[in-house]
Image (cartoon, rainbow, N blue to C red; front, side):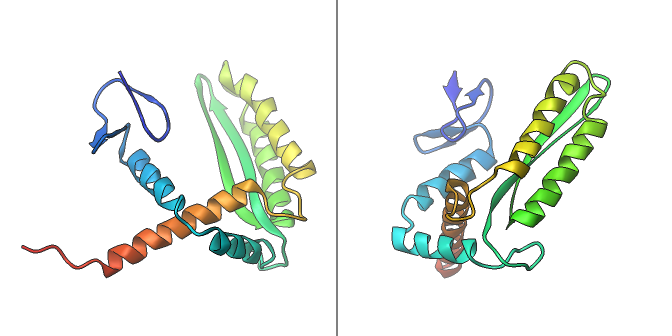
Length: 171
């Protein structure tokens, strides 16, 4: 059995080959390519962009920074079906607190209705949101998650720029 070169998932059937690499799906192949391009983003450009975003305006409310990556955790359940998610968002502390409080309330109301995972995951997700509200990234300096987010965005811009300047294939 093979493993996905991006996420590490075991591939039982199918998968996608790309040269010497194997991926579980096209999304992982794209993520692997993006991560490999991101390794070549110049450090000085990365740090400049991270500082600009961190000290800039919040993309959600337009308010003053610092802006950073904040996580929102949600769970909902119905009988034997349970769904949970982690939604990272780029915003200021105020927007993050509102969003995390809403997700904690949503999870507390709709998360525990499933057995067994709803009952197990609801307190975990509510607790994670409360920890995000009380803790979260330090406002004095950008988090590693913000740096990773910006690095991947810069890599995506490089890929898009290269595709725009690539000559069309000959027919």
